[in-house]
Length: 300
Image: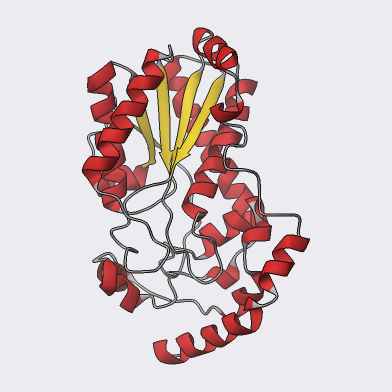
């Protein structure tokens, strides 16, 4: 199926589902937990003070508000890492190390998807300055360690997180690090000896075609953590892009090039998504992150 036929078919499916989708999501039980659920925002100042004095680590999720195809919400890159950190905190507690979760950072860099409506962009310098201020504030409160993770694959976004962590360390002396999976560390060309980055390994199933945005992995994760936010009626209409390395390179040029390459805003195979696979992947990420955190803090 050529791109024009794919677009026409998918848009027809979107139109058919648009009227019923909001009602379906409401009947499913609302729209997920509030944005501050299980974060420090729900604590009192005395509770935050006690957590800092007890040696608790701080966990911080980074995402963006950007398009994720016609089937996933704009906040997908925030919902997924936030869920991973909630589970990581549980694992850390079971292993004897306490952690608190800072409200997610969601005003990030959208170099690739910036041409789509709903994608909000900020400048790297803005992001770095804000990160440094927040990390300095957390240090002032008595917390000694902050561990960040990212739900957004944009290279510039993730390099900026690393730069923000580095700036925060320099400004306040806090022991902060960003947790990246090993392939991303390599892609960004980061020095693995830097205290500002911690690499972790997660086994991934081999795929026939590249799936990097709003495809099977992200849709599977959202079906697991927030199924009421997935426009499930649209999934059968979304054909796999079946793209390879050359297509990925073109898409990564960003902005209008990315929109031309993926007119519906997804790069992969969302229709193949499965909630159980999303649950397993989330669990694997949370465990891997917990392990590198424990190694850093000297836990069990």
